[in-house]
Image (cartoon, rainbow, N blue to C red):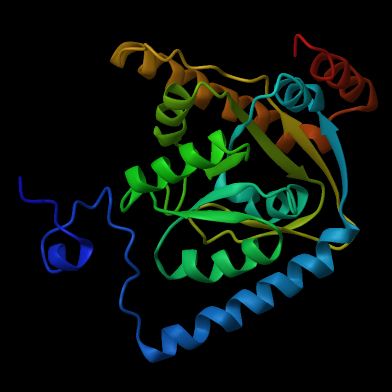
Length: 262
C-alpha cells in the first residue's frame, strides 16, 4: 500500500489545532530585539537577589517521600510567586510548561539559564502537545512544573492540565507557594507578581502529594481538580500569612506541616 502519511512540509499551510500549535508567532524586529534584552536583565536580577533570600521550608518530607519512592513530581504553583520559585527550584532540570507568546519567550531564556528545560504550550495554545512532551520527560525521570493560573489568568484559578498529566503518567501533583516578608508587588499586574526585597525572608510551603487514578472518569477528574485547587489555596494562605503569625502560631504550623500527616 502507498504511504499516505503526510510530512510536516506537506501539511504546511493547512489548519492546525490550537491545542497542538506550538509555532512561534511572527514578531516585529523590535519585539525580537527585546527578547534577549529582557531575558538577560531578568536573569541578572534573579542572580543578584536570589542568593540573598532566606527561605524556610514547610512540608519538605512531602517532596522527599515521592522521590524516595522512585517517582517524579508534577509541581503546581500560582504565577504570583514565579520569581522566588524560579530561584528556589533552580538547577534541578525541571521541565516547565512555557507559552509561545512574547512574555513566554523572554522568560524562557531566564529559566533555561537557571537550569530548567521547557515544553512549549499553554492552556490557550499548544497545551496538548506540551502535555505530551511533559509526559515523556516524567518517564525519563524529570520533574515538571506548571504556573497553574498562567499565562494570563484568571488569578488563582487552576487549569486542568496537571490533573490530565497525573492520570496519564501515574505521578503525583504537589502544590507549593512561597510567601515573602518583604517584596515589591506589581499591583496593576493581573497576577500581583512579587519580586523580593534584598535579604528578604520567605517561607516555602509544600502540600502532600495528590494522586489521580489512571481509570478516573470525568467526575473523578473534576473531583481531583477541585482537590488540587484546594491544595493550592491552602499552601498560599499559609505562606502569605506566615509573617503575620505569632511565634507560638508558627510553631504550631511547623509541627503540623513537618510531619507525614500534614
